[in-house]
Image (cartoon, rainbow, N blue to C red; front, side, top):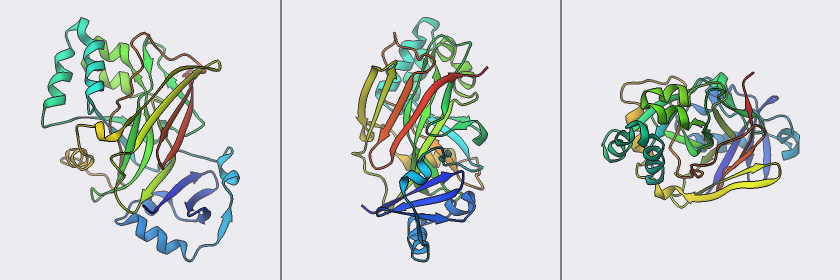
Length: 283
């Protein structure tokens, strides 16, 4: 499968294609929000000179691959996620909500982040000061253009305050939406055909040099289809510059684990790369 990768950097947009790196002096939103993005970029590359090696922009240059787009998220799209949500809310009587939404026609969709709150690869993500149980959630993230077409993919970290959501499902916005509760990166992956259902997602959490959690899963374990989620999101919403949609997680650390300051979280998705973040807290 042919593909390319778009990197948003402090110096502008860089495209990686067949081992070469190209400068693209186009505004990010106008560049990515178009139909047949892969075909367009391949044609543009023919008139662009090669100017970079990976080291030129990977060191202290990467920005999250987002412009003015909103970030939304889907929940309970994997069976393991349903089990985890039911477990965290069983003592407060909210577990049946997750069982029902997993089986329902209508998926769980929620607003995750405005672009200025999104962290990039190499940045810090935050845990809330008022939450005692915090985890990362590694998710394949869709870029959907303004015409409801899935044109690209990136890696998402949907940081979650499980103690807050577990206390009451109505606290979901506070558990999910706060400064640096979302990370995207390292690039926007643009393939010539939709991403393979055999694609693997893996996550590793390291604390003081010790691996605290490590696991992987294929996205074919997801109950919902990507186009199905996009269709529901666009039913009553318009996105003039497109949007990003996190598609849910199946990698859930054990219930006795919570993130700590300076933990290192690395999320890898086949063909896209690795999103790395250090855990911090808003002061």
